[in-house]
Image (cartoon, rainbow, N blue to C red; front, top):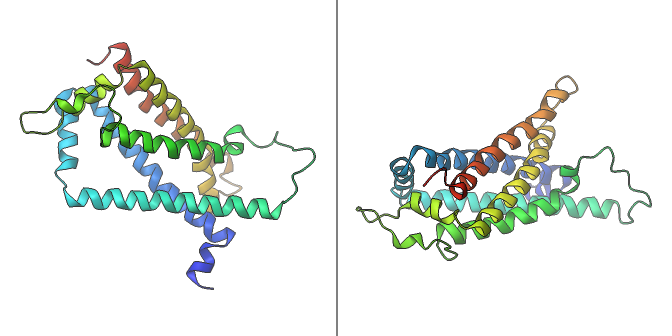
Length: 225
C-alpha cells in the first residue's frame, strides 16, 4: 500500500491527525510559556520577542512548518469525519450521547472556531492588521516593537479580551478530548492505564486554560500595566 493510500485510509488519517496534534499541542504550551513572561515585566517579554525575531529566515521556516502541520491536521480530521459519515449515512433515530463527553461531541465545531481564531490572532498580534491598541507605532530604541506595551494595551479593550477568553475556552475544550484521543490512536492508552491517560487531556487543558486566560485578564484588570 502506497503512502498516499495509507494517508487516505481511516488508520492513516487518524495517525496523521495524532502526530500533527502532538506538534500543535507542544507549540501551544511553548507559546503560552513564552507569553507568560509578560508577568516578568517589559524587558523580559520584549527580549523574548527580540530573540524570536533575530532568528530571521529560521523563524519563517518554523512558521511554514507550523502552518503545514496545521493544514495536515485539518485535512486528516476532514478525512476522518468524511469516512465516519460515509460509514453511517443515515443518522441514528435515537442518539445515545450519554457515554460521550461534550468535548468529544463538539470536536468539529471547536476545531473550526480555533482555526478562525488563529487567523484573527495572526492579524491582530503578528501583522497588526487588526490593531485595537495601535501599539505598532511604539518602537523600542533598537527599532523593534514594544511587544509588552502592545499586549497590555491590546487586552485593555474589553472586546479583545472577551474574544481571546472565549477562544481559549474553546481551544482547551478541543484539547481536553484531543490529547487523550491521540494517545489512544498511538496505542499509549491501555486497559491498565486508561484511567490515568484519560485524565491527561483535561489536566493539560486546564493548565493551558489558566495560563492563557491569566494574561488578558491581568491586563484588563490592571494587574499588569
